[in-house]
Image 1 (cartoon, helix red, strand yellow):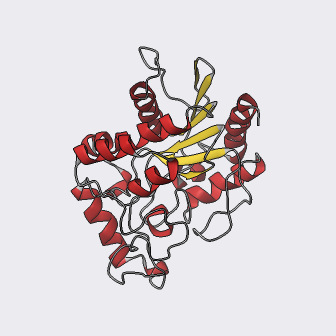
Image 2 (cartoon, rainbow, N blue to C red; image 1 turned 180 degrees about the horizontal axis):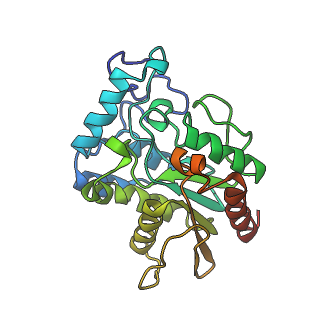
Image 3 (tube, rainbow, N blue to C red; image 1 turned 135 degrees about the vertical axis):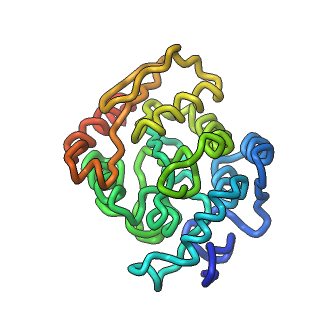
Length: 266
């Protein structure tokens, strides 16, 4: 594996699970994102293009700065430092949507909700509910896999203070829309982790051609809405703040994922 000591992983040089190569086309602006997302013929090709996007200068600068400076506890570890693509089953019955990669979680490991406290709580629940191979997700080469589910972020790059701008959300949206479109034949339930993911999912569903209700359903833990046979579920984000304060607990997550699993017939 080739690791840049002062920056992100180089595409196609051995990072575990890297979907991209040196030949993968790179989006450098919003128009490029829209064009490359729409023309990706397969899910692996879409993931590869997602993983090398450079359309948002602020996000590119931040994710690569983090990958260069690194947290003290991870100084001796390589950082992914690139957009984090969708991950999991190619034919998922359940889609799990988050906000964005964590600076020292997904931005470090290259896999969403992997290597941070949010992922610790989330994957324990996914394992209990039969969606994950094991209860931990710590690195891209740890042997973890998702069963019947796919996981993605509404914004693919780690944002400063975990707060992407509206413009960054909109620029990234075609990646979400294209992924929704590519798996829509199989998905029967969508779990949205947090209000940002809830809103992004509804926007993506509308742009993917679904007739979404107006006004859009309000977010809340356990909120649910049906689009034909598709169940959309709201779930509080398993952030460190939410889990430490008890706003969201393991049993609360389990109830959401069991509801999604039952509806999807998994």
